[in-house]
Image (cartoon, rainbow, N blue to C red; front, side, top):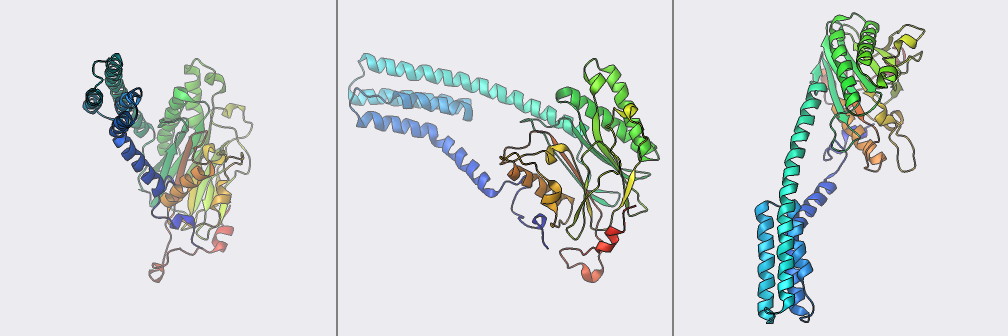
Length: 403
């Protein structure tokens, strides 16, 4: 069975097709010619109607349309051309000495001057916005760097989409790194929004990167994260100091084994996509409290193991994916949407998921941030099997793998 992840090579990773790009180009071309078209329509209207009618609304609109889309020089030139056309039309009509002619010219000149001022304000705001976006992009690269495509012999891909327009980072997090204990990874969701959530993300990621290198078990890593959030909570004088928490899944893929260890602290269960198109939700046997609330739990953490066969892909995500709704209010079910589909690797998987969830929500995006991390174990193929597009994985290996 060939899945959606192996089709549609012409579509972008965000799920938008070439039709939307063509529509954007057509809109830009229309805006580019609109000022000149307004001046031409105004001139035709003035020439083809009685002298009591005037095309000044068209002449005034031309520089206003040019102001937010064109340079200062083009905006000024549009205003000058509109004013000269007004003067020429009154000369042709023999109405240059009338009060209406003076009023019309004064109106076009005044609107042109306002258009030039608007252009300056828009350009300055655009430069400030571009600077802010550059800072946000730099912050995202520092806090959530894009992981390498290959880590510890595994294929890796990550995506982050903030729900807030023009935002680059929010309260969701992911991390993956090669350690002496194998490839360790984390995906989490910090309670709250805004800068406070971003600060908590930085705390969790900083603690994870250090603990993942030094702690021998995932349970010990979780304890280090609990202590880091506790220290952050006592430092911050806000409600988060009492009620702050982070849902998180910690993972470990040892270098010398075909197993996957997970420790889930109140987070949506990851999905394991097998090479035959089947999907399994890796839910913990016992629910656990999120990070930052470890002192309230009565039982110690305990990681669980699953078989991680060749050709399988592990998908970790935040609730921005599973809580995305369509127009009827139906939640997006990633396990149901992915079952029966086969993907060459993590990049193709995340490309399909982001596009599919956008279609599910009608293109309006999600109401919460969405972090996705996919890790795939390369398929082992014999030389004569390398021509096959889809590797075959025996179900017996998978079904007997959970420990």
